[in-house]
Length: 628
Image (tube, rainbow, N blue to C red):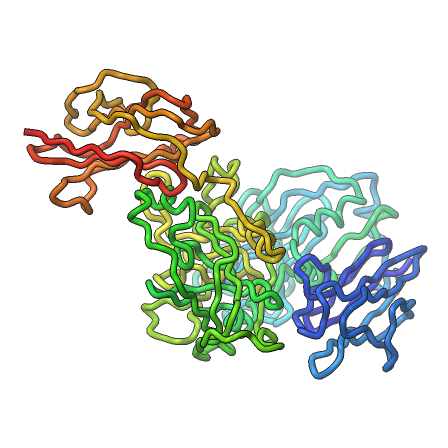
């Protein structure tokens, strides 16, 4: 049995026997290349009866070995296969290795792991020098000043390889590896300290050294020997992180059940910032500008916020808590400006149209259609576009580092601006089946960052920065929309299919037959039932009785009721939305009372009460009320 090792310009990957490995430009390929001469599904490596074979999948420009085009090629110990033709052809090195050839030298049995089961212990989170790293049993992290350390410190008091965090088979420990300045816990120098709960140590000096915090992230578990590689694969998501762990680590045999990593690196400490700048674009419309991220260069697809490119997309009314007529109309023209790299100005090169939009998620996918003058795109016009890989945002955890790239107006710069922070926490939305709807982050966001790129340490997009995101209690929240929510939009745009949000109903169905003041409830919200009408407001709340008919039979109806002075209609005295009451299912006809928090009793004057229905709260009824 042999293992396949593939080295490309994007990095090195290791694949187990019996697997199938696809290579090409498409997002779903195991190994993804961004050269325009590589087909979307260029080729496949397959392992059959212990032998590896490369098969060209009818690629446009072919696969070549020593100048000869190949369609099915049995691999030897080491081969070079060239994908495509011309200056942008991609040479890849392919090696097949038996167990004894694995990286890390000769393999030895580890008696501590050669039992029927082993105690894996907690998953650990390490935080040090502005970096974070997660470990599972079988992994070791090195902290020091050396470039090959898992976490690299630039503190001069830290030795090149200062300490290790490792699992002994029964427990986690922090161990000094012969540092000059020592390791200190609670002011006392230690050579070893067991990890239980959260442990804080100082490297090099008890007062001004580098601070390392190690904390448990999951309960202890008993794992079978063969499960260890699976646990490690889940721990380090994504192709590049898996590669880093395999290439950097020495391997040990775990009985006959599987493989364990003796050392793993959680990924690079900093992504390729030039590539991030190239993949982040400025999105310019007649109403302003924002940012976007190229997610499919071959198809010219750009991911951004709905409020940047499609501000009246169904769901924006619910998110912003306004009536439909208050939303900005979608732009008639969208211009895309592209940068050649970090610190390089973005220049207008293309125009685009909205290919898919979801107002509730505040996401939109644009498709480049013509050049910036409106002329048809010549062949190869998109070849210089650079896209980024989509991460699995479901794998993102609090304290993970994040880089935000965009074009904020406050920067007064035509080049992309970078900020860095960590994921501070998550926001869950019951309407999204309790999925994470936002990542909170301490990375600085400004107007113009909206729709841009939030990347992980591997340079993959994990989320879309958004500003002025209204929470369900009508407060503002700057956050990051997880990229997993964007996948259905990207897929629809790539396939040329129409996209309809499953989270809101865009079309309004229903009519209000009567509006009157009603008895307010004990708290703001929508209460079903035909209660008494004609009651005055209380000191803080106003009740509005809404009688309706012809309501669509839906699992939830989005209602908005607002009150304002007729003399100043833009100044809302109060409003109430049913969005916070998900799911609110009312009969197809009947009544409900909307209780609005107005803060103080209404003074004499004329007031306007408006009712909106649907994903954008389309106004369907208005009541003018005079209080003498």
